[in-house]
Image 1 (cartoon, rainbow, N blue to C red):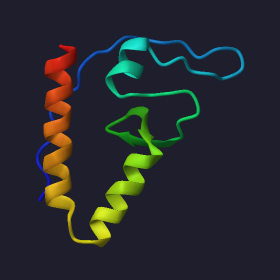
Image 2: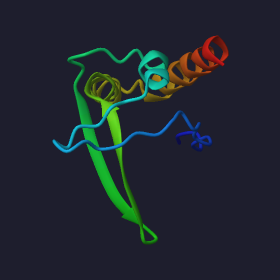
Image 3: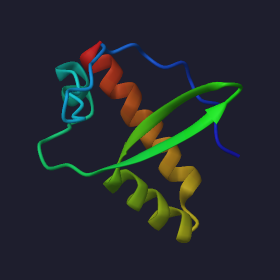
Length: 92
């Protein structure tokens, strides 16, 4: 079973431009090592009348699928959580 999700951090706001482009705040780009040309999956859904979307680096999803197929998800999730905690301490 996966750990319960933790509360999300507020990292800024952004506006959709006339061409539909979204600018990701610098704090987010630094924290998650987002570089020009990185590919993302866009996920969306509706829950209890609220809506929104989620951007996930394609390489993260690819790695998770590989780990899942190899039966390594629990160890991989633990490493991801440890890395996120390290990033929080370093950038906090």
